[in-house]
Length: 433
Image (cartoon, rainbow, N blue to C red):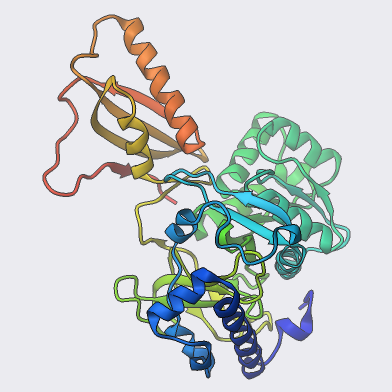
């Protein structure tokens, strides 16, 4: 086993919990003293920092929700002075106001350290060439992996997304040994390479893939290895907690959550009760050392379970298992979070449409394909084909602007889509992950 920081990564469980308690206690005191938001929340919950006497007392603290970030847009939850901020990342805002995350220099260093541990645990290091095919810019994936890869001494090939044939050429020419991207894009690269007459397995040096940002399965891991000769490792994170931060190791028995950086809990999504290791529920995360935008008991919404036994690799930090679902109705389309409510909001702003729609999601080849079937309002329906084409273009443009992902629109005649009694079933997801 090769660790980036063996002292931390193999720390005995009791020592790790003592460290977590000290970090939590410091965090709670700091926020109670200097954050109006957390001070008010703790007062409302009837908890004082002095009540946190053990690590398990974290369950006395109130939860934080995504709407808290939106309600305080853009930066009213920030706890660091503005002149100490060195970067912002912003979500796509598919459900309304986007969320803004700020970083101090130390926040970036902590994020990079987390990814240095993750990449090292996947067997990467000096001498590797890591092709980063996540998006750069406001999305956290590209820059997060970029700095993590540089930290471990690897060379970075910052290809971002798109221009696939050029990516394959560079992969060959610069002898990339690893790639970081979404799983669907990795398979798309493999299929594109075949069309170019190139075998990823035989004609490139690619041997590892750090993939995430959308659901994928063990069967997909097997397919990637058998067709491309690439070992795929799952990576996890959300923009609110910094970005991608945690990954599997070479033992591939779950995603290591570095306990000195974050404290994970699993709760019953209905009651909020903390569940025991091994029980499946909603993931809640407290980021123990964050400065600019601290997160205490942030309800992420992903469904998973915790395994707190030591890993076969020798690392002692807890692991979460594959994400099996969401507590809300969010879809992930080509790495982008899409909420049906955001689709509805966008469609309601188009006067030529009635209020009825269906979202159909398939996986064609390796990529997600989303179709929105929407009913035209009777007064706008026409037998002139050009009128309908113009409405279709308008709807596709509106949805792309609202969702940040291109979707196909099919117009339906007035009265042709199903009506629902009770809760409408707007989504038909036929993907087999």
